[in-house]
Length: 332
Image (cartoon, rainbow, N blue to C red; front, side, top):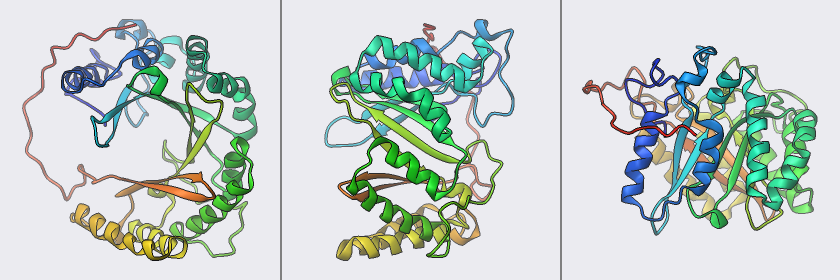
């Protein structure tokens, strides 16, 4: 979720911090389980005062000026609030690239947290950047007590071949079960990107000029483990022919790999058509943005990310008065 107001991206709030902080304040009042210790560790690295970037104004070619986003994990108890930090503000403050600003910030976070898994990851991170073509993009943490939290480092790679994906997934956990999961991932890849069943694994997907093109991954570390979990986000919004191909491919994948339970995919199709009543799925792509995949016990754990396209020309909404914020932003 990107919280915004009419002042977001303006001279007074160039990296849109006020609206997210107001949202967080409201969430704290509603959910007693929110713990901000991990949030504050990251906020000290990524939230900067507008005065400190006056000599390095933000670039105008970004998809969004925001520093801070939120996600929510729903369960039986209170939702788990997840905070996502982008490095653009820190890059503008220091005059460095976003990737460099992110890497430097993570090095400082590493010294503060002293998690074995994070120590191991950051020790080899420079090598991973070079060997796998990683570009650090974003970092996230759960707003829960630190011993239960996770740190997730998001990276992008320009390599859109399946062979490149295989290298990344095996770099963190090279076991026979990973190979089984990769075979499932190859089947899904073939179906959602409409490739021949015997496609060349070294072949790149069609070029995209979007700022969010390429393969997206996150690497997850926890405080009480030395293990690292990797997840890939397949950017179907850029590379699939259209939303109809993606959802049909996903259904065929489920039918081939999940047995009788695979037919539940048709319920997903019905829900997707309800969400996208403003246009037919075959008319374009973007209602489905990513298919996220992790490999667990030799099989894929899948999550589909949906964008209802609220700004699509076919959707119209009344204008609302300008929102005024009274929250004072703490600059660390």
